[in-house]
View 1: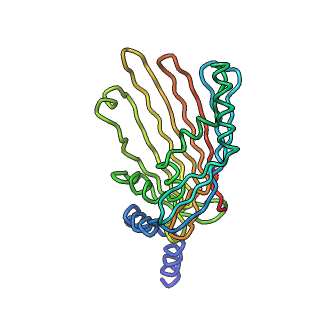
View 2: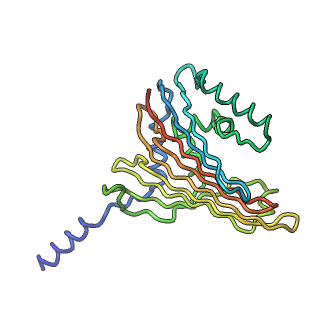
View 3: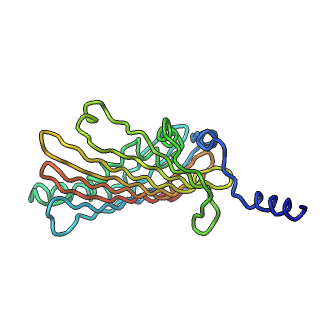
Length: 246
């Protein structure tokens, strides 16, 4: 009898701890990272785009210097960067087919997106609002123990756009450390539909690694890709942003 009891106890000890309320605990953890403290960083952005039947993709790379803190969010544009943008614009005037990758990347680096790179906690809280927990289990990340949460994220889609969709799925995976702080995430969005009797489909993917900097849950790196087919378009793009302190 003692051996049976001892075996049962050992089995219970071996079972990974599964939190009873993973999303509630995640919200509590994310609230610990309100940001606001000073940060001086560089964001290296690399983007690859392919449009239509283009033989070669357009590739661009740029470094964006940013500062944030009590003074708010500030972008620092060195003269050499603005000269590169001007050279692109002049080449485009001479040849309308000439790409403008640097200008395109700067256009996508909106204050909201950069603020999310510097502190991802508020955006993650919005993402998991109304999400459904599909799975919570022990896992590994880079060979180290981690807790994996798999979520079904509700689509933030207007009623007008929803009427055109036949299928939509947003699945988010989160890897947490022993304290419940996000280490990494992977999100995949797939959709298809029909509008004006024309079918369309697309996908988006986001792969992110996180790092704690003071009271910030920053994105150490983030890669997002997108594809779309329909209405005469067949486009693909992938963008990677890497954060480094200055």
